[in-house]
Length: 227
Image (tube, rainbow, N blue to C red):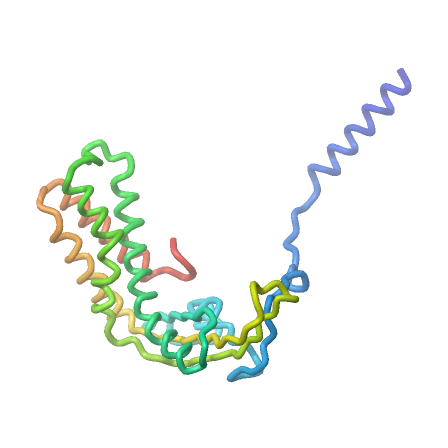
């Protein structure tokens, strides 16, 4: 009986300790292994805006009420010029992709569980395919007023001994873009009109209009990443 009581107390102590255990964030910066060495760069410090332009802008007290900030970094290219040209060119498609993603997510959420919408309706299917496959390309032409604020490049030596597939030298380049929110809203309005015009059925059109309005609200108030 004495042994039973002691055992029970031990179990209770173990459970109490387990329930009070805290989960802590772990700094894994020392354990992340890169498969390259930086041999040259445009700055000795890698800018924070590369990782999250919106948060960087807020922390550095930029005019985030009037502007939104975007950044894009390339994969390694054969030359610095090619990498930086690609970074500048891709930032517009990156913004267009974000606008399209907000629209796609909002449309999906509005249609989910709505019994009035027939998922097999040819008009609904065509609209979904248009948004997924074509809209981003059309939105790129609506991106006006994007201003290049900063750029940063690195010359990297990728090494097999560090985990790279092969030994090679590559250049990466990142670009920071500032775009007026009024221009983003205009692009969203015009993108929404393109999507809305693809629908003829009155009930579906109303559902689409409400979803597009929600998409615009979400993008303009976004702080970090996609909602």
